[in-house]
Image 1 (cartoon, rainbow, N blue to C red):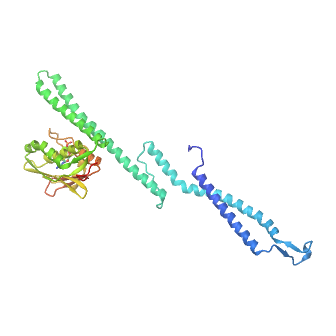
Image 2: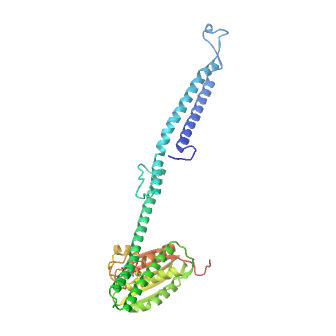
Image 3: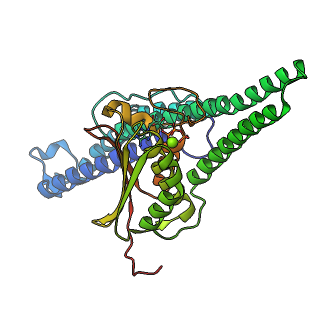
Length: 370
Ligand SMILES: Nc1ncnc2c1ncn2[C@@H]1O[C@H](COP(=O)(O)OP(=O)(O)OP(=O)(O)O)[C@@H](O)[C@H]1O
Ligand SMILES: [Mg+2]
């Protein structure tokens, strides 16, 4: 393994174990020595004075030291070897999970996000680190898959108008007597749709990057503006719009929040009952949250049908390509703008049919200035 010069953690741990063992051993030997000094007299009379020359007085302590010192040194030497070998083995076992984690990190760096550490054993610091890393890999993998899906869908949607234009041009070329006015009109419509789609994609990416300036915004004014703009569409669909609510101040991008409100009201109109539908738009502050609710009558939906609708390019059950059919990015934009404003988006099917969509954003007091 290539590592910058310096002691490895395993070696450092080994040295620490061995050093600690040496200190503990030395302290123990010192304690034994002190104990011996306390209970053994300095000199002792020999029982049989003939055994030694002189007066028969024997220097016990110095003799004891002669016996004790080499043995103590041997014990210390043994402890040193034992500490080094034991420490090396123990440190290796302790650090083994780290090797697995490092290996997984290296694989992830090289692009393999499907690998998991799955560290066995009981919960300890290493296990927690490995589990956190696995969770991160799961999220990252899902995110990358989502991005890839999005890119594939976006490319597909962008190719459709180009393919239609090509088909129209091909027909015009083979049939020179065709009405060019009609051709131009259809090409114009297809082109407008393609531009709108591209602008939607740009809007999504801008909102995702959170690169917008924030201002004081009153959601009730935005709701009013969006409703007014969409009134002709509502009339065309035979839908009645009822707005209610108080001043609902929040902070965010006025343009993006207007887009969010417009998308919701637009959906509530076009995905409503075929006739005599109703849309309720309500704004208000509830316990430090600015709430925008858009509710509409419509077909019966289950929670399972409703939850994926915010995914990009999801168009509900009917996938009919009429001129009215959208691309399925309206609610994705709503979700992205809501999240970019640190808010939450909730979709609930109404028991009587249709959906209630709630956007909750952090509220600010109407009187406080930044
Ligand atoms: N208010 C609503 N009531 C009932 N169904 C809805 C409502 N809003 C959205 N839907 C369903 O969710 C799907 C996705 O909505 P979304 O706004 O993302 O796409 P779209 O309206 O189909 O196209 P566009 O990109 O033009 O908005 C719709 O096709 C529709 O089936
Ligand atoms: Mg829509």
